[in-house]
Image (cartoon, rainbow, N blue to C red; front, side):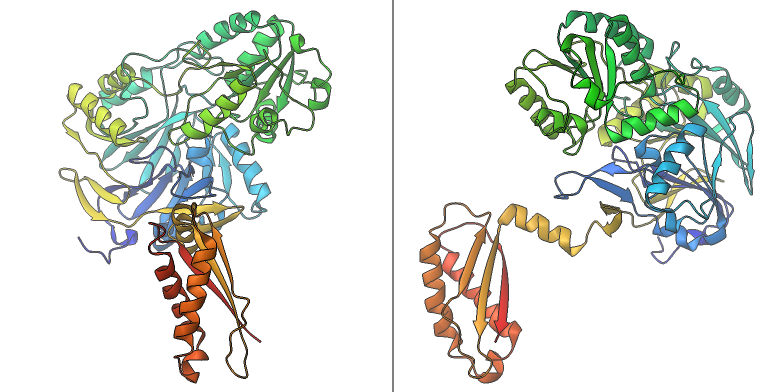
Amino acid sequence: MNSNLQLNDFNEGLHFLSLGGIGEIGANCYLYGCDGKWIMIDLGLSFADEKFPGVDLLVPKIDHIDSLKNNLEAIIISHGHEDHAGAVAFLANKIKCPVYASKFAKLLIENRLKEFNKVEGFSLNEIDFNKKLSLNNFEINFIPTTHSIPEPSAIVIKTQYGQLLHTADWKIDNSPTLGESFSKKQFEKLGSEGLLALIGDSTNANVPGISQSENDVKEELTNIFSRFPNRIVVTCFSSNIARMKNIINAAKKNKRKVALVGRSMKKNIEIARKCGYFEENEMFISEDEASYIPRENLVIICTGSQGEKRSALYRIAYNSHQHLHLEPEDVVIFSSRDIPGNEKSINNLKNLLIRQRVEIVTADDDLVHVSGHGYAEEIKKMYNWTKPYLSIPVHGEPMHLEAHKQLSYSSQVPFTKILENGKCLKIAPGEPKIVEKFETGKLIVEGKNLYDSESHFIKERRKYSFEGLVLISLIIKEDDYSINKNILITFKGLPGLNEENIKNDFKIHFIENYVKLNKDQKSADQVVSDLAKSTLRKAMKNTIQKKPEIEVHLIRS
């Protein structure tokens, strides 16, 4: 493989490259190239894990598109979830082509672009599912599906080499709360026409059976609400408009008023109104009003299902919300799934609530959540309808991809390729094969700024969090190079130290070695700092097993 190759060097054939979304949950970003022209499907973000202390979000590196210039013709967003659309606003400055999204997803993206002051000059277009999108070397068609957000679609990519199906996130829901029921007809049509490759969602490939319908949750929530006499709090994803409708329906049937708490939840409800998913007269009480409503007459819908520290539920649970608090025998319903990597923060929040004698209800207890992703039998049905020549599992961790691979084998798909982010697959002509490995990675979101995930400051944070930190402050006189006797040493994140002994040992040996330096060495900050670090390490060697980061503040007066 030629490490000097760039994407614009692939001028012949049909290629597929993932910049995010394979081997992981989130950060979905997929490139398709046909005879030198390219499209991108989805540009999402992901949650950071413990490898990135103090960081909440990551976005994929997309520097490889720089070489394409005008040959990247479009970015197509399959639906509005943050792991598929959330990185658009962060990476808007790098996007030079039109972006296409459904009405609901488009409005979500527009809101984020406004926050970043990047609306002007940005080409964001609404998809009409009934019309094809014609581009150079590609003809794009959309097949509406069912998922846990309004207006999801699978994407059919027609090229001179054959048709591709990018399923995006989907499930079979024959009675969804919003939108039309899932229809298999267009997928069967693809199968009869001949499908070259299926690039498919793997999230629940390792879950046997068939997923349940959102309508089942609707019925169950009404029954669950009737069981509880006190305040009910329900937390769910703010983009799950169908779930919020079902919560509101259950509240009305139990003669309860509804308060929305959380900035993203309120914004998404307004977007849903614009798309016609809520009546204009659907009213919610304010947070202030909710504080006066009797417990038995109130339902609170709020953000925070993933234990996010700035979320509404987190603030309510920690009694730091301006208007709302919980009392013993209230109930909190987690109407969502745990995103991998968030389990610890979610459990911490649940434990806090339990200590306050607040009852917890999850999907393990009652039918308060159904997945938006199809289970194993649904994926097999998709293969039986579409009969692809090639399967490329995406959107999942290795265990999900492997389970998806087994499903494609059992469905008699001739070829299945499990890839990694950065491995470029030549789909056609000829048999599918990997032709290049591109470097990929993530960018850290800090506020509205982006930094490389390998940035020095993140490595420092990691080091500090694992090994601790020691700060040494030295004052040296400019005229005679003498050291002020008030040497300060501060220890951070290091347990069980006899600090006075270490400080005394350091001072004795440091001064002893310092006086041996010549004038040139004493005037060199680096030499003095290195001596201080090495002396302190020796002083700590026998008292601690860790190797803390040592910083020297050297002041010449």
